[in-house]
Image (cartoon, rainbow, N blue to C red):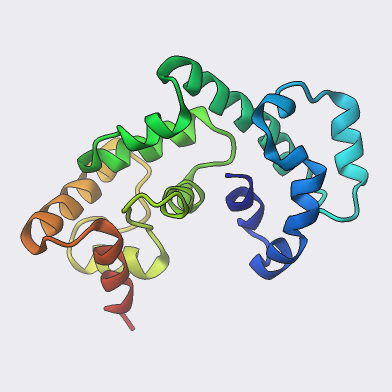
Length: 177
């Protein structure tokens, strides 16, 4: 989760190169430990030259640890939350993650789910262009209605082709100039 947040808007190569330092600085991203972080930990992280010292993104790690803990308390585990979400309502999962998590809206949440192994669509510029050509949406979805239209289209294409959302999304991305 943190890797997706830190990669957003930064060079992925830089983040990947610094990732071992991130893991060390954030105690291996142990949610139980991060829940007890306080102001001194923020100061320590902001001074750590081994990581990207973006205060908002660092704070998102604290906030997302709380998100994971809250969901785990509700459902037993965060993985249950992801795995049990209906595949035919991924747009609902995107919206829920964006609302409950920190800095997980847009492509960040979509990439997070794909990195977790969920067969999902990622609304890259090319995929959005194809969705526009198909008359589904004319821009990145921001309303529930637009998200519903995107989800309905992917559900129909998955039913028609038997392909998972990841493959459909990738085919769409390769189908435009």
